[in-house]
Every structure is written in structure tokens, then in C-alpha cells.
Image (cartoon, rainbow, N blue to C red; front, side):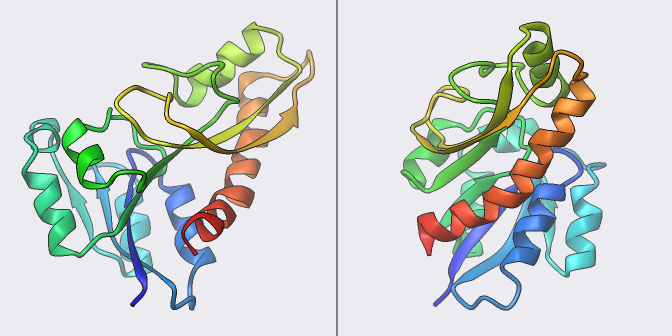
Length: 188
């Protein structure tokens, strides 16, 4: 039986698509479902192109402790990957999937993490702090934003002339390169 992994995403879904394509033809992993809190997120179009069902849920449904667990159990989900998902994971889900929920963060935690630190906000903070490097952190999810145990980090150089968009590009390259590999090594 393949490991069934649900992907949660709030945005374009490029990491979700990259992960699913990486594992295409691999019988150890199955991605039967993509969930999003945004009905207009481009991840839904990516899911349709990949032939994977996607589900949109409201904030209330996410927090009610019943709706999302029911959907995940109906699809026999074993693990959850957060790929650009912006809501804090409720304790109910963490308890149902202990050490089975991972997230990717576009910086080197513990720096530049926490509530409100996502996407462009992170890259701007890195540039404003005149950091000489940035990168990605893949970590387990716990009850606090970006504080779960770190699984993997990769770095990229940041120069004084790098704009937040330039940093974002470098970090995005790291995400696409390493996120699927880490999933394969962690759960393979």
C-alpha cells in the first residue's frame, strides 16, 4: 500500500505540483487530495491538470475539528504536507497526525519565522536585515508557527544588491530541488 499524502496549499501550488510530478510513477507514494482555504487559489487549477481532486474549505470548517479530519480519513490519509499553506494547524489535526505533518518555510528558522512571516514578507525581512544568506527550512508542525523540530535546511547566498524578489527566486529554486527529496527520505 502506498503512503497517502494530502497537500495543503493556499496559493499558486507550484510546490504541490513539483512534489506530485517528482513522485509520478513511484508506487510508494500517493497524493489523492489537495486541500486549500482559498477557492480562487491557482493550486486548484494545477490539481485539475494533474487529475487530483481538490477541496476548498472555510476557516470555520478548518477549525471545527470535524470537517477536515473527516475528509482526510475518508481518503485514508497517512501524512500531510504543507506547501505554501498559511493557516495555523489546529491541535486536533496535530493530535491525529503526530509527527506526520511537515511544512516548508522560506527562510532559515528560527530566523524570520512566526505569524505573518510568509512569502514576500520573509524575503523583505531578510533583505532589510542585510543577511548574507537565506534558504529553506522543512520542519514538523506543532502548535506554534514555525517552531516544530527542524528536519532539513538548505542555504543560498544573499548579496547586498539582492531585492526581495531576487531572494524569493533563489529560495524557490531550493524548495523545488529539496522538498520532494526530503519527503522521499523522511517517509520512503
